[in-house]
Each structure stands twice: as C-alpha cells, then as structure tokens.
Image (cartoon, rainbow, N blue to C red; front, side, top):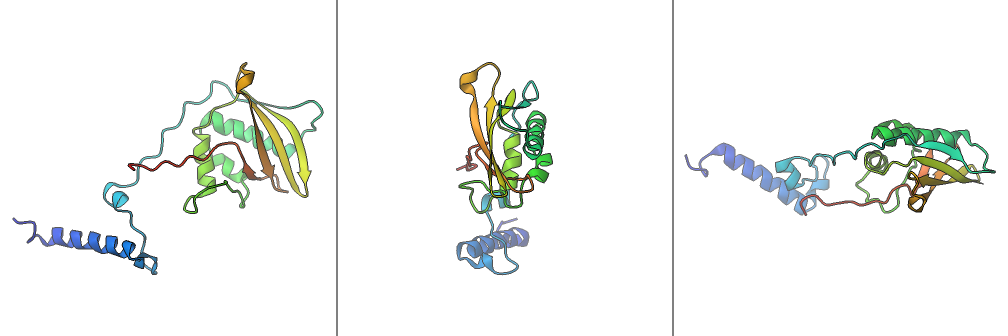
Amino acid sequence: MKMANNPVHAGACIAALMMFTASAHGTAAQPGWQQVDLRSFFHGEPPPPPKAPPPKQLATISMAPGVAVDAQVDRFLRGLADAIKAREGKPMLALLSPKYAIDDLPPDRKPADMFVQAMEQIAGPSEMQVMSLEKQGVNCIAKVEFRFGTEREKSKTKTFEFDGDGKLLRSDLFKLQIQQVGA
C-alpha cells in the first residue's frame, strides 16, 4: 500500500499541516483554536524534573535576639521547612497570596506552579533564623538567614514580603532558571 493512497495517513498530515499553518499565521488566537507546539503534539509534554533528595533534617525556626515573634511569619516558615523536607510544595499554595509574583517570570508561567516546583529542588537549610521584621503599611518584610549545618559561610539571607493576611507576596528564596527542553 502506498502512503499517498492511505487516507488516514494523508488526513493526519493535512491536520498537522493545518495546525502548523494556523499557528504560524496567527489564526490560532481565534476562538476554538489553540496554539500548537509540534514537538509536544508529536512527542507529548516532557516529564517533570526529578525531585532533589530531601534534607537530612527538618529546619529549625528561630528569632534573632531582639526580634519579636510574628505568628504569621512563623507559620509560613514552619510550613516552608516542612515542604522542603517532604519535597512537596502543594501544601504551601494556601500560604501564597493571590498576588504572589516572581520577578522576570515569563507570562506563560504561573508563579504558584514555579514555587511548588522550587520546593522540590532547593537546598534544605538546617535552620531559618528571622533576623528582622519590618512593617510597611499592612505588609511585613522578613529578612531570614538560611543556615546550612555548621558551615556559616554558606548561610544566605533571604527576603520575604507578606500581605496583611500573612500570605507571601514575593521573595528572593530562589533564582528563576527556565530551561528549554530539546533546544
């Protein structure tokens, strides 16, 4: 049987060509059309990256001398420690503000999804110590030192901004690195 005479093969080629042409000419934005990526059309979506191994211990949460305990910041950091230890970020979604944002995030990506993925990858500290809390209107800015065992030179100070409900608006907890698959 020749390929040219096979109606199923010819139909599939025409459908793929129509989708490719529609996306190339911008008609995919019309109602009822979707933007088609031929790589994922033929090969499916790439698998999610594997989770990093969990840290050996759950991070302790503490306050620097002279810093008063803030219940909402404490609750967030304890949830964060649990999420990093379990390598499961979904429970943290309830602690993210609907306005949660990540600097330089491409518009086709969701900040909450990136946060969940980061919980599966970032290094687990042994301690998180709140170094300062600053109120800015209803928002709260927390500077938190992440400590990694006895190696003080590896400590990193991270900034977290919370809204009036104690939900995370933004932070510099992780650095965004988007990799193109197969490019």
